Length: 78
Image (cartoon, rainbow, N blue to C red):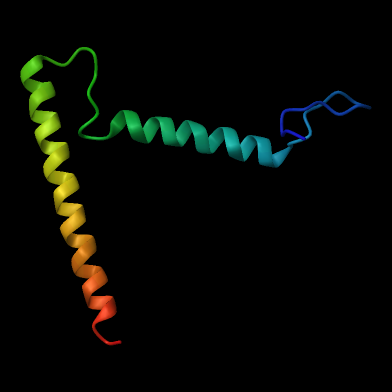
């Protein structure tokens, strides 16, 4: 059974509120990915693409170090 499947009696989608929530979540997720700082667009110049790739790499490394430090703090008391 899928949220978009029609009802056998009335023909309306079975999802109701869940279907609307799922569509809203998908729209918000698409909006967030488009507005993210390091999203590479087709209109970006080659220099801007290079800088965005470098920025994304530094962001990934920073998050990895931060996650490790938080994990280390969580493990210390044990």
